[in-house]
Length: 331
Image 1 (cartoon, rainbow, N blue to C red):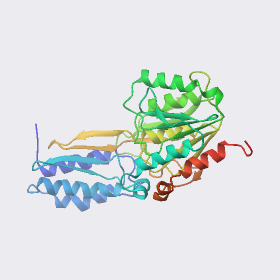
Image 2: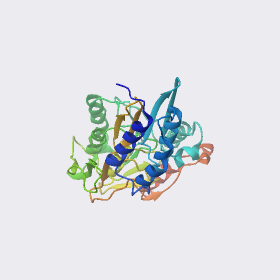
Image 3: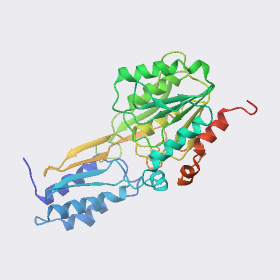
Image 4: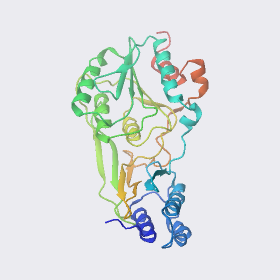
């Protein structure tokens, strides 16, 4: 039954975050203080538009792309997310990401690669030169296990003839941890801890679920255990970040680019008594050695940023740098 009482809806919204959101201290937001500021603004006479605006103001400082509220007010759909613009998208401008990957393809082709093309799994685009492979992972969901496995099996047939590999997750919006692990397992040298995860269950400092550990497990043959370059940027989110967190555990991986976005968690999806939908981060990811990169992202080993100038020049400097590392002098 729909309950439009503004006070009750505010209280439910605030309490859900208070009990389940793990990162107030990390993101420097005093949630109790937010209540003290915004609760007095809500009365029984508060309109839907006023309530929506108040909730948006309250969550905005979290700067978390997994924090969102959606409503239909006076026949109009409204949506707000606490995500701030990424440097990657801001620097490249409108249509810039598409143009950048066209530049990436041209840079690869000029260095002897095939044009990267979709595999049996549409989320994977693959191309190679005589000795180096390039794999772009568009996202990590929306693909069945059978198609993913088929694509990876075919990809793996090239591994014995390659001396280096580039994996490109720039612009990856995320997806499933299981998909990320399934891909990395084709590159794993042995069993390793990928990452740990736990879930916030209550408002207490120790109100967490037991820690769950994900492992990398070598799969298929041959596996590629030569040098790997991972290309990243701050528009890599969620499951894409879990991919980076796990891949960096392999000793042969170098990360080039920018830090990832810093929102690792799956989203906890809820509905207010008035029917509005909202979601929030509610899980903490930890690296194999128990480091939390929430709010700062997985850092690169070599910082190198894409700009509009790259598109204008028709050269992707991250690809160029990766090839410099993977191509021995004099070869």
